Length: 231
Ligand code: DC
Image (cartoon, rainbow, N blue to C red; front, side):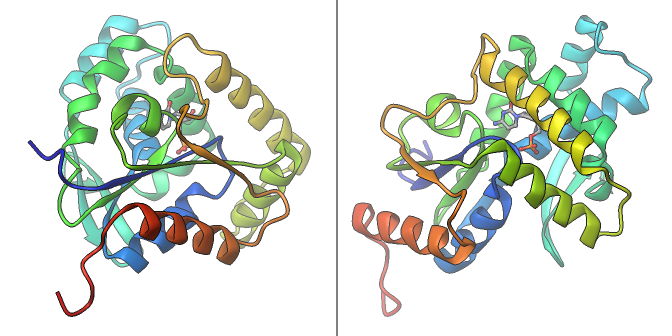
């Protein structure tokens, strides 16, 4: 139904800068953004708030099937609302990150969240940021990229981000947690974090954000006929 709406998928491991790149590219194109990590984080937050543990599989699946999640344009991009309540900052805490990676490994939860994600495909286009955007959620996307960077570089980027927000953080711990989460996300049986066959892999370890954004925009413009400003 909405298959005519162009989608750019941006997949890759945590801390690679997908969020910043997606926001910049979407602003340039005037497209919507789907932060699919926020969807898994919202399940994790709701679960923790209800006192559910990772071993309560059935309750977690039931929760993901009736997740009262919505998005709306906010001051800093998109606000994520859980039951109508903005939860942006709560989604970014370490306990929520750890739980999100666990709920994301449950196949029934991934299936329950598909429709919600595909619903975000709205005109004039969508930038979908995640792990399986190009492989599972939008396999027909006309442009797919996979961003990568060494775990060392990604841990440093995340460290800088958290420091700027004034959050207490220990680099060695961040590095270890990131390695652990990477392993879980890459090795899980369902929708592991791997590039789609038709994705362009961009190693951003030594690339500035501007360069990454420019290279993706060039790719989109060469693949998709975008309306000119006069259209
Ligand atoms: O990108 P992020 O760190 O906000 O993602 C949070 C967790 O959700 C992470 O463990 C990977 C998982 N995730 C996923 O499995 N599939 C996606 N499309 C996006 C995120």
